[in-house]
Length: 505
Image (cartoon, rainbow, N blue to C red):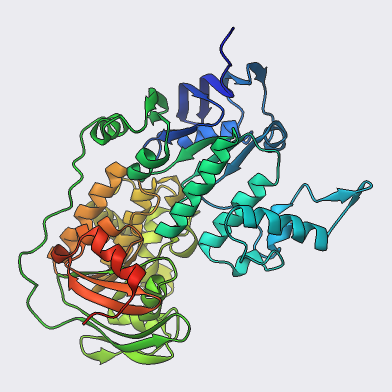
């Protein structure tokens, strides 16, 4: 008896754009009921490959077979009708529509040939959300009112609303806390048990070992490894395949003793109703202080309130002993604060502008003379700031949208270096950044601190907080439950604290 053909087979896939060969003869086989992990650094070709699979791009050459039969995916609708659903990292939800409307967008429930709206769509959506373990999400609520984690669940519900046989998940855990990741993996397990295949993309290699069956690694548009066993392949081997070199999973060394001097940033009794309460913290020049906690613990809200993007209910933020005007970003920036937000593309970067303009935008008064901008001075300053961070390519005139995730983050950091900030607020600094670029960013952050910058860091990855920070504040439900030097903590201790939540002096 002949063996069952793969659910999906892609062979010899090529795709070129002007000046760039994004895919160069890629092969990929996916079996029904497996989790096939797709790995590679930013720019390796992962996004292009999944867009070919989703019908958003047409390959220049190569063949796609579905259950052994050759197919042509001319559009995303064609892929969806075949049973292929894609959940992109940048969720394509419509914020002003309800959850139910988003879930059924383009294939609304019908009866007797007529579209059924309202109650029927909400009931169908509620059933899907319950299946995903999130019955608490109201199908009638606007998607724009949901958290990032809840929007991820809505996107998954939309995929499951079709007769799906293969789901592509692009960085699905990026906005999830550990409990949400556990729920995501439960969902994936249920899907594969029912014969659904999952193509899973993540920069978190520990997830690949936990959930994956096989691994394909892309580098420079080519598959440098196909179908490796996910659990048996050493992490070092995977990293070497991705980067072309060995990358040690170590963080830069931290100072043996706390840096001397008075705190440059002081937060006293800071509260924001419904988000966090009675926060006290200090950060000295040369010190990295980390905030650890689950999604919803108030981490990002604290950074945004310190930065003036949110107005506190009570308390003070002081820089060099001087209180800042509450809820004023302008006052914070003038005092020397800079923020690298979690959603850098939406909240920090001007995606259609050059690297130069993105770096200089917070320092334009330096280059303005009588209403005119000195373009030469602006370009020179931007080039100096980006070279200090080894941003690539070494050409600040290119659009920032063409950079990899790690280099886009360097552009945000260069902005605040040019501004001469004293306190750098980092929210998920390595989100969407590949493993090789992460090591570079860690080194950059540590070097900036060693040069006297005060850093307040938030990350959903506990090892990242413990590896970078000098001191750690552990948060639960908006309260600090423990404070300690990072070297005195480990991941298990932090997770115990955020789950227990009893204040510790």
